[in-house]
Amino acid sequence: VALGGELAEFAGRQPTALRLTEILAMKTQEGLRSILQEELPVRLANRIAHLDNLPDLEAVRDIRSVRQDFAAAFEEVRTATPENFAGVIRRFKKRNEDHALRLTQGMKAWGELQRGKGQPEETRAFIDSFLDRLFLSRIGMETLTSQYLALSTCPDGIVDLSCDPCQVCASAAKQVSDVASEYLVTVPKIEISFHGDQSARTLPLIPHYLFYIVAELLKNSLRAVGELHESGSGNLEPVQIRVASDESQVALLIMDRGGGIPFERQPHVWSYMYSTARGNRMCKQTGQILDEGDEQPSPFFGYGVGLPLSRLYAEYLGGSLHLMSMPNFGTHAYLFLQQSSDRAEALPNYVNWLRKKKLREDIQVYEAQEKLAAASRDYAEAL
Ligand code: W6P
Image 1 (cartoon, rainbow, N blue to C red):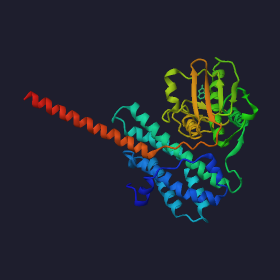
Image 2 (cartoon, rainbow, N blue to C red):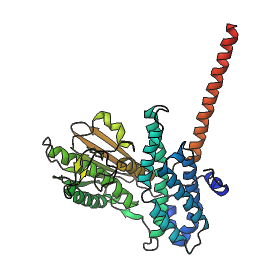
Image 3 (spheres, rainbow, N blue to C red):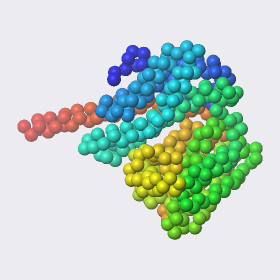
């Protein structure tokens, strides 16, 4: 698994976090290609090195296969010509499609391997932060490669310079309600209202990412309200979306009265290792039972990575996502986004992570040496 010469060299470089304005400055595919051919290998090599730091990597097939994909992509991007670059990027994206699933399943298997080596709670926290960094880096590569491909058909690529969050919410609401009606007997209404200056209503944004976040939150809200109502213990209260903004930020609040999340489950909502997709659920249309432990992603219940991924998308865009839940009442989700297009992408810092890891190891070595020294002092005194 050791890194080859060129791979190691690129892994030692820091990825460059690009500003939205900088990404937009590349108006042509050819311009962005030359940037990508430098930057993608750095990001890929960082991710490979990151994976290689995982003990027992070889024992987990899903993780090994992701590493192989990255290594192949590194090679292909490095050796691509301007003529075949688009094909290389398309193939890379195609292979990447199920990475989230493979990485999550792989890390679950890895977690099983670690049983008996240390605290399960620490293992879970390690896995979650490991996956957070990988997925954040993935979002960055997704942005650059999607922008590259989209430039062939749209002048601004995947960026909407005057994106209206209310419109994105409305289309997410429509799509999620349609899908929900296949899985839930009763689907609550979704109400959207805007509060703020009309002049601050739009912002430069990648609408697809906002759509993903809002759709994910709405799925959870509709499901909670719908199921509470079906169990006969709740009214069919509408889910409310409030969008408020000034010239510096936009805030979105999605409120449901779906009975909330029990306090002891709340810390787990950001974990990749707890899926809410479990439990015997019937698909209303097909009658198919999505049974306990069913790991297959279904369009409505997903496989439990939606919330942590949504938070990463928010962070990538320079914003944040928070859940405030009141058990036996309902849940409020807050999403904050910066108005400015001058902010840089949020990227994981692999080099810093390695430094910290080394520092911790050094501290452990130091502590062990101190203990040894103290023990031999005690021993000498006892003599
Ligand atoms: C719930 C659980 C949840 C998670 C995320 C967003 C909204 C909601 N509502 O009951």
